[in-house]
Image (tube, rainbow, N blue to C red):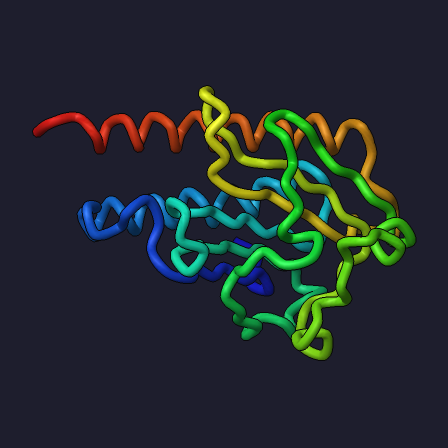
Length: 182
């Protein structure tokens, strides 16, 4: 990982009470790495992956990867409640790509509400749902601030769609393995 990069996890994932601590740590590492890979695939300065655990929003888990450009935000912590654009429901397989101007003009953009002064800025937005084969939505993968002031493009869309599908398939396999009797 880049020394300026930030990784964070908030609360347990996949009914963590049923997971062995070592397995849960490996899963956390996989999901942190997903953010790092999403940035590498798209040239984004920021990536965040929010995973839902059942229907209880308080059990969501969030992972970040921030470039050295965002080192000032390395201590930023907020429970992932899914407000504004972060709460947008994106159908399986679809990707939302917004320019900086489109983010600000979007009716769901709230300017981070009470976190406006401390939240990393969004400069453009690329997002897709992380889904299982059966359409189960595990979470949301989102990126912002493409390096060099560029905009996200069709290639970036294709790359995160594939990465999100891979993570969805992995979570499906882990969920099914955890449901098998010992």
